[in-house]
Length: 129
Image 1 (cartoon, one colour):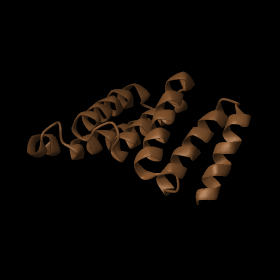
Image 2 (cartoon, one colour):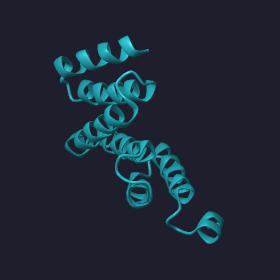
Image 3 (spheres, rainbow, N blue to C red):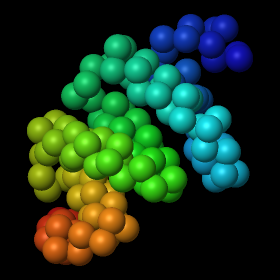
Image 4 (cartoon, rainbow, N blue to C red):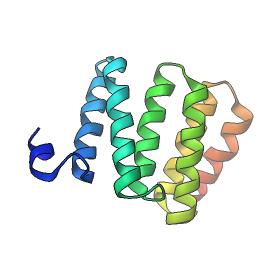
């Protein structure tokens, strides 16, 4: 409430607070409370920072992790793919955050049982790190 009051509800730091609270709810198993907060943080970051900003990609990853946790793989995959594309374009393919994007997508594919899609991503991430 303080960040919203002082900075406004369209400030990136407010989005970070929403994301942190959503993460707490996710860890508590309160997925229905986490999702709207993740979505709001993502919308703020898209509007204020743009859809090519690394923090926007972080929002995509955190929302994807929620969907992955509840088994909504069809919702998680496009988010992981978009975050990976942003990291490749903005940070380039040798950046550690790009490797993280590869790992996140590989983890999703592994959980989906798509091991043939996961392996090359893990190998590419390993080569970067």
